[in-house]
Length: 327
Image (tube, rainbow, N blue to C red; front, side):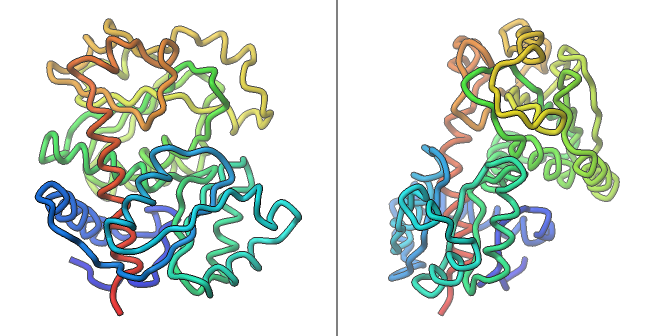
């Protein structure tokens, strides 16, 4: 177990060793037990963090705000459209100043080609931890909550078949950060990961290369297919979720010919029936109901989306406690 975390940044789990991630999970489970028992956890008393949002949020904002309150601290919610960022203030200046005001800065910036660079720029100049609440490349808070949920459900996740599957949606052109973080993390825990998508929705080559290395090192596997049914077949966990064609087409248009030609990539009861007997349906939420998934699936017996969403609270609290705790 690692114990030296104070001041560490949380931008991608690729920057964390497996031992550090194991500690993060252990703390998450401990905080969840204490939450269930009503045990006070004032580990961040009088600590302040800043939550910078370039776009909307439900689970991330509320898990962070509720989480730090339950830890005895306080969060300042910052809509960046009302900050001097809107007038051109750069990440360096924002990072330096906010880090002098409090104890951590969390930021969500999913703009393609900009978000991760913005976080890395703040990381360079901030004197306190930078926490990635989702950027264009990574969503580590979601991935660690997903992993915690899987461990709760099957205990030993090694050799579990986990299928990350593109799904049709038209609510907005979604970032690639969730599948990227999942495909990089899950092989590190010995899972057999299948990545399925229609041609045109590729993830970056460097992601696939790194995921394969992670699988080779830790005893997992990575299979890529363009056959949706193959991904569902005998799967223990399925994660059908939309992501945009950012790698092949950086247009911000939500609906185009490529998207519409793949309307059949949808999680239905017929697809779920192809999985293992106890297959579990997961989604980071919000799901585009009726497009990504049928109501009968997300509301059905195979769905664990609400357990998954709750774990966003406990894992976020663990991240904050480890990075901001101590004297």
